Image (tube, rainbow, N blue to C red):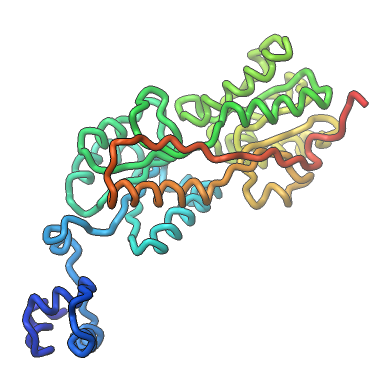
Length: 337
C-alpha cells in the first residue's frame, strides 16, 4: 500500500493537500479533490487509523464491550439485536465499532490496556455483573462511555436502560390479576444487574398483594435456553400455577421442560417471559412477555455517546426507555371471571 507521500507524488500535489482531501477539507478545490481521489481509489489507499488519531485526536471508532462468554454472545438473540442497534447507529453517524470478544476474566485483566491504546473515542458497555471492575477502569481512564443498563452503586455515570423492576412487577401482577396465586420465577443470574432488578419486581408484585414469598418457587437461571430448561425441571416438584421467567430464551427452555413433562401451557402451568425476541410470537403457545426496545437501547447508547464525544458537557444522561406488556396465549384467560 502506498504512503501518503507517494500518493502526493503520484497526484502532483503536496502531502498536506492529500491529507486535506482524505479528511474532507471543504477548502480543497474540486479539480484537486478529484485528481487526488482518483489516485487513492486506483491504489486502494487506506489511511492509518492510529496516525490519524494522533493527528486529529479522534479515531471515529467506538468500542463495544459485552462482558459475557463468546458462545453466549452469538447464541442469545438479545445480543444479536443489541449489536445490530449499535452498528446501525455507528454507520449512520460515520463511526466504526470495535467489538471486544473475550471471556469475562480476560477482559477484566486487559481492560486498562485496551482503554489506553488510543484506538477508540469512547466505549459502550452492556450486561455488566454487579461487581465488575470495568466501570471503575472506565472512570479512571476519563474516556467517554455509556452503559446499557444502570450500575447498582456507581450513580454518576451515563446510562440507558429500561425499568426492569417496574416491568417485572407489571407482568407478575398481570398473572395475579388472572387469579394465579402460586406464582414461581426463574430469575436471571443474581450477580447481573438486570437479573437482580427483575427478581425485585417479582417480589414487589407478590408483596403488594400480601402473598408470602415461597423460596421453593424461586430458581436462579442464567438467561440461556438450557438454563431455563433445567430450572423449570427443578420447579416441577413445587407444582406452580404460573411462572415468570426473566428472559425469553429461558422461557423457551421452560416450555420444552413443561412439554416433556406432559403438561399443557397455560392449562396446567401459565408461563410469561421478558424481552419479546422474534421467536416469542412463534412459540407453542405464543409467549406473553415484556417487550423491551433492545435495538433502540444500542442505538440510543451510541447516539448519546457520540454527542458526549463531540459536545462534552457536565450533565449526566440517565435515559429510561419504555417497555410494553405483550399479552399472548401462554398465560391463559381471566380465571376470576
